[in-house]
Length: 84
Image (cartoon, rainbow, N blue to C red; front, side, top):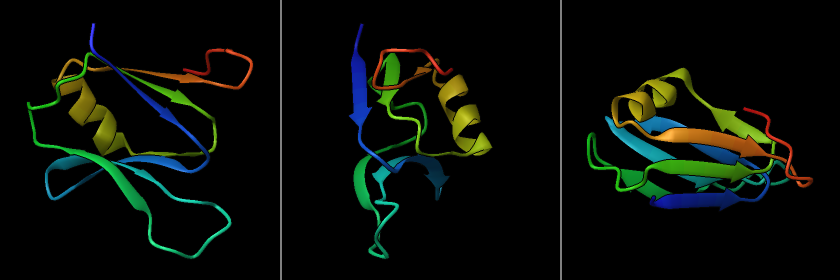
């Protein structure tokens, strides 16, 4: 299993120009988001993505992208409670 863990406030998962973009945007700042990872279609090398925070965003288009790549997505809070 190849797992990607994202942690921090303001994690964003979206699609831009046919690429999956994982970014971190501070909710308390007007600065541009920091890009953590980008993936081409069908080139995601992870089986699962775990997000350890519940503040951020996920687009429906990103859900479709992850589904086509057979990547599972799990949201956990600081107590380890599953919010998926």
